[in-house]
Length: 197
Image (tube, rainbow, N blue to C red):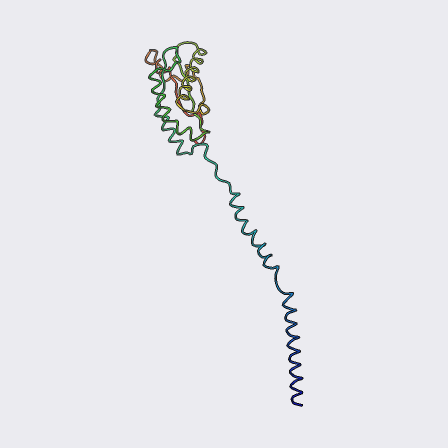
């Protein structure tokens, strides 16, 4: 009887153990998370890509096309040292002394005006008081044009130089003699733009 009970108990334990194992396998098998790692990888990928998109979309600062205040001050100082080119009576050809003057002027200005493509110079043409206003306006224009051409030949950009004639207006000397008239027959280089001043 004791043996029979032991056998029955062993069978019950075996049956329970087999039933318990079956339940564990059945529960463990459907609960196996085979898809979850793929979903979490898909979720983390965009978060890694978003900062890369932000960096790519950040615009680079545009290069400066116009001088800042400090550079404008430097240009003003250079322009104050530039000498006028002088002309003979009733002529607009560039004399040898004017060539030397303009060559020095071009060396002073070329680096700056090439660096800032929106900055412009003005080449002004003048004459002495003799002759009609109309004639002297045309003569002043011819002197300014020749001066600009000479500066362009020396490497200054033509697009950054305006030409204007003042004829016999704005005289630097008011005496009525040759020394004074010579001072008024000139081409003068200055800035054509007053932005930032």
